[in-house]
Image (tube, rainbow, N blue to C red; front, top):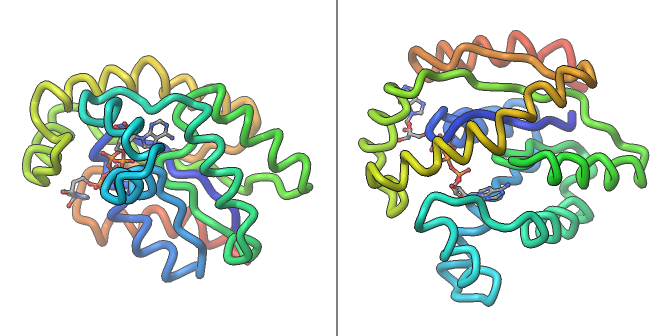
Length: 186
Ligand code: B4P
């Protein structure tokens, strides 16, 4: 199964992804995790990405697209993958479409986790990562509304979008998500 996870910051994408990759035996491609690893390793990409992440802005498309292009070519992705936090802009989605068209391996599903903003604030403030301060959270929510939400219409138009209520216990949400994914798993 080739799937994309979309949702606002703090929706619980990473939390659900950790369980889904076990159940469906998928490679987990979290662009947030990749960027944080690059930042901690102090690579050129990591230093550049940190300038954006620390203020709640999206990292430039060309950096992310390059990272994903290389990652998708690795052997563990051939059996299916979960893209967690990518694409986040229309330009990233179009680049992904082109990459997958070249290999004849289209997406099976795009799953949206829906969570209201006041709940997102509570969750992120509780997590306490360096980019989880109130000011940076606000900026990340603006970035989501302006740059990522348009993807919902983009993938609806392609007949790929499924939306799941992301409010409730982690287990309940996992059950909702797997009810959607089970028929697609192979
Ligand atoms: P990400 O790492 O993708 O992180 P996120 O959206 O903040 O979190 P996620 O939705 O995974 O929430 P989580 O499970 O942790 O992005 C970080 C930054 O990287 C971006 O701001 C951007 O700068 C950059 N970036 C990444 N990808 C990019 C791209 N493609 N293009 C450009 N820039 C990019 O859950 C959050 C908290 O809620 C946790 O504490 C968790 O325990 C809790 N939680 C989870 N489920 C819950 C539930 N059901 N109930 C209560 N709490 C819950």
